Image 1 (cartoon, one colour):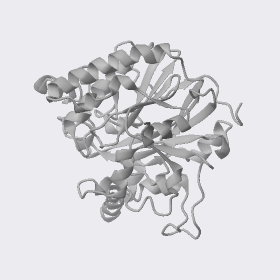
Image 2 (cartoon, rainbow, N blue to C red):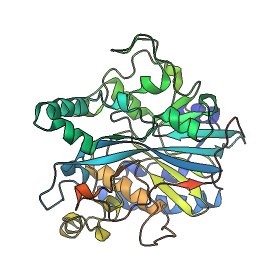
Image 3 (cartoon, helix red, strand yellow):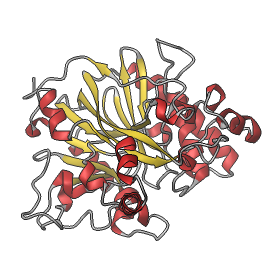
Length: 375
């Protein structure tokens, strides 16, 4: 008998990825890492042979502050500003599902006003408001580029063109801002309308459950109450690695959060992977990093990754997940030393934060032509 999760997948033209079945339960942990790596290598071969996405385009949304000590697991070894900026990036993907239907997926459609309500950022705003020059500090680390709706219009899309949206995890995300709510959000006058019409949100069942019942160690990074008035049918949940169609997959990458998942895309230049397990390629390839302390972290601990570590729900799982991402990603054609990993929120390459700037950055992703009204 098919599970509820499988029924959900078939309903959206998607399917599970059998190569990863059980690898995250392998014991002991050293054997688990080996299993994850081997499964990723096996899946990569099939993934690349299965087809490509039709089009993909990334657009920057906003730059928000983030503590340096979290960004590189406290590895940075020189005095620096306590905060850097991360640029939120929205990715629009067009593909055909396994039933042959044209689909449009929006990955990471962050609404800055919603993110600001997460306790971590709300407390940070209060702190900067109290210190001398706080407004200047805020202008230095916060910038706004576009709202998700602006991005759609720029690409010639309407809300009705979007089939699905998803976030790699729900830290600082307010689903009400995306899916709408039958309740009036504090400070607003009427119930919030859906941002993407009838689009549904794809979310790992553990991530949705986390937002439904927050642990105190998770609370600061989630928008408590972010599910208020949201229609449960707006969610499509899954409990494993899934393929949405040829050339597009959501890989379960637990660790940063229990329900974290990563976007994998097969393109004319090979496989790209996007998540917030790191905020710069330096996190996945610390041996190449010029950020002071990151390469030494790699050498001192014998670790092939340096995680983005604000929560550490399970640091060993996050390590394995980043290896999974590294194994899937192809080398860049522009510089083969660097993998095609595109952080969903990326360390800003601003001189004001030197020397904590990306050693290398892809700057975005674009293939094919995004088409509106079903092309």
